Image (cartoon, rainbow, N blue to C red; front, side, top):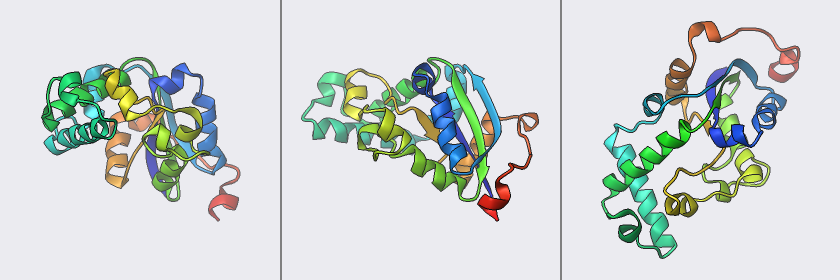
Length: 193
């Protein structure tokens, strides 16, 4: 059994997709053990994203440069630099602003192979590349170039922990022990048995 965090980001909340998103996870047999709506500030968002890890920031910048190249756009003209680290800092700032732009729903889910199951249901991080039938593939068409040209984060509806280490960190960041509940779903024996 694994526990993992899903965030319904401000775009998912504002579009009224909370119930639809939660139902996809429940229908597959995952159990909600923590759930809350919060409106965080950028300082809290900076705890969620590894904005102080140089390799992460630089990686974001390199992805952004690649996107500009794919679309034949000039990043220097648009962003004022070609430095991957400086561009990564801009993108990280857009992510912080976006996560703090409105209320979000934090969900702690539990189940066998919960992390992989949730990532499969959520779909590829970039919505226009996500498969039909996934949350991002069904409800968003946003792309890196749209976000970059508008100087904003990609609107991809949800965040899902990427691995066990990240899931543990995010569980402790987003949920206090008294917000996590243990109970048995009526169908657990059928699903897990």
